[in-house]
Length: 328
Ligand code: BTN
Image (tube, rainbow, N blue to C red):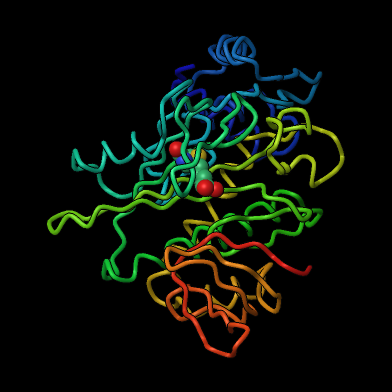
C-alpha cells in the first residue's frame, strides 16, 4: 500500500494520543480540513486499520493490518537516523543484496530494506535463511560506519545487543534475550534472530550491510522440519500475534541509539554482550577454519572475538566460528 504522508500523520496522532482523538484535533494534527478526515479514515480502514468512531470522543485506533507499510514505519520512526529511508518489498531475493545494490549506487547511510518474503534469504556460511511470508522481520540496513574498516567486526556485537534490547523492550520484560556468539540472539533458549553482516571495503565509499532476520509471529509448525528455533511470540507466551511494525520500530530505535556507542564507547557494548552471552563460562566446541577447538569460553575480546581457553590451557582468540555448547 502506498500511503500519503497525511495518512501517516493521522496514524501517528492517533497512536500518540493512546485514546480517542476529537475530530478537529485529529484534522489539525493531520493538516487537513475536518471535512476531509472521514474520507481518509475510510481509506485507512480499507487498508486494514481498525479505526473506531467513539461517540462524543472521536476516532480511536485499534489493530493495524499484518503488513509492513513503509509510510507507517516511517511515521513510527521519525528521527531514527538508521532508517531515514525505508523500502518494503512484498518479495525479493535477499534484502542484503538490495541494500548492497543501493550502496554501490551511492546511497547514503540510513536506508532500511524490508521484505515480507525472501526467496533467497541467506545466513552465515552460505546457509539458507527461512523467511516465511508475513511471519517475521527480514531486513537490511545500509551502513557507512565512521570507524576504520579493520574495526567493522564490531558491527556484529552492536547489532546483537541492539536487537536483544529491542526484543526485550517490546516483550515488556516477558522475554529475556541472550546472545550466542558471534551473531545469534536467543529467546527462551532457542534461536530467534540471525544476523549477517556483509561489507565491501571499497576505498572510496566502503559500506556494510547489517542483515537481520527476526522470527516474530511463528508458531511451532511454521518452522521447517529440522530447524530448532523459536519466535518472539512463542517466547512471550501469551499466544497473541505481535504487531510486527511495532517490533521493527522498537528494534530500529535501539539500533540507532546504540550506533554512536559503537563508534565512541565500544567497551560498553562489549560489556553488555558479555553479560548477555550464552557461552561465557561454558565448555564449548567451536568449528573454525583452523579445525575443531574445545575449551572454556572465557569472555569477549576487545574487537568482539571470543576468548577460548583450550583444554590444554592455551588461549585462543577467535574472530568467528560455529559454536556448540558442550554442557549447559
Ligand atoms: C544467520 O543466522 O546465519 C544469519 C541470518 C540472517 C538473515 C537475514 S534476513 C534479512 C537479511 N537478508 C538475508 O538474505 N539475510 C539476512
